[in-house]
Length: 348
Image 1: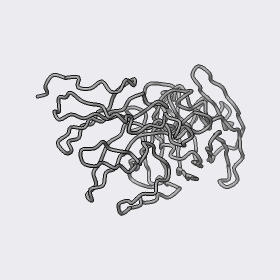
Image 2: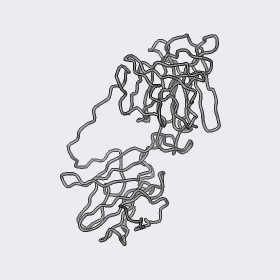
Image 3: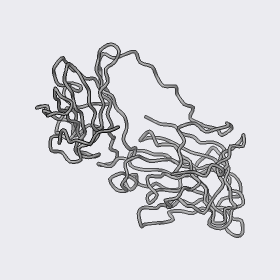
């Protein structure tokens, strides 16, 4: 049974004090929190007490991690916070934290990423993160034996019995609309579209690199006018770029590039193409998403470039990052789309 809640430390005065962790070391209770909000003013502060209930004394050198100050204002890593401290089996101390990497200007799109940094934590002393309370993309320090992650193939084919854990849905999916038939991923379209707060027929993977190339091959079947299937660069239900195929009443198939940005919705380009499979491609870099298509599978024609900043956290809201999604929408629920593969190659 839990006791009544009790306020034990207010932090150093930064807004949104949150994410507390308590550690016992050398007879002290150390209380680690984040302050400043999940943005450029984020910071990690620490206090300690001999009694778990307090009173807690703040570290005179707070914050112990932040990139809000001048010494890290040009760092490619910003918004450092939500940290945790870990003691390795050899007695060394480390900090893992969340932060983001801005792209064009002060906009970021990948959401918060996890970073690790060395910590010096002497007996009865305050922990010191990476010497000066900042972190970097490259930190040359004595470390533990490293184990590289298994590399993933750039192309995922859908000839498996189930999808890997990297694939995610929007809200609670209707599993009967996702079919692995041994050759393709078949998405059964429903009237729920990408702007809805319901669960559209959608499955996606996170954008993990600022520079990347992604693509798929799709065939829309039993399509009625306004039915669509394709790939989306998705931040929120009100902010996404969509590259898709659709067919008119006479069976003419077309490639469409559309953007949805808050209340703004616009067809950027529509191109007639032959019936059958079409390959869709999205390339990302610091400033643009470039969209292209192919009907032969090898030579892609660029359709247009869309600015990355309109899907950023600072413009669109949200902070969980871009999802590259495959989807299908049908007013009649009769259409279905077969996806042969999904390509993703990070270029950094």
